[in-house]
Image 1 (cartoon, rainbow, N blue to C red):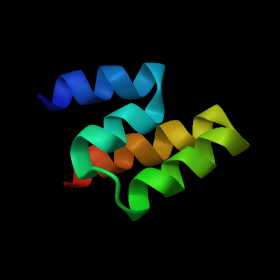
Image 2: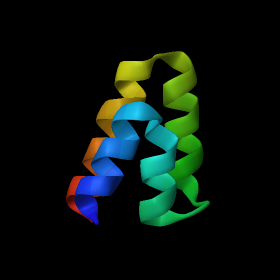
Image 3: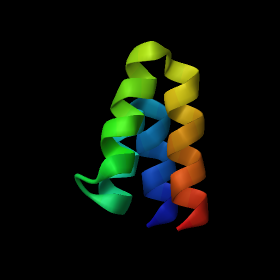
Length: 52
């Protein structure tokens, strides 16, 4: 399941975070980071998936 989350995070980072933590703080933070730039959102998404 983590592989699917990582692949979805490569396409749209907030989707992978949502599948991991739901509508929590990290989801909204990831949306903000993705709006600032794709790379910060992607790094945050991979970090959340890898550490939980």
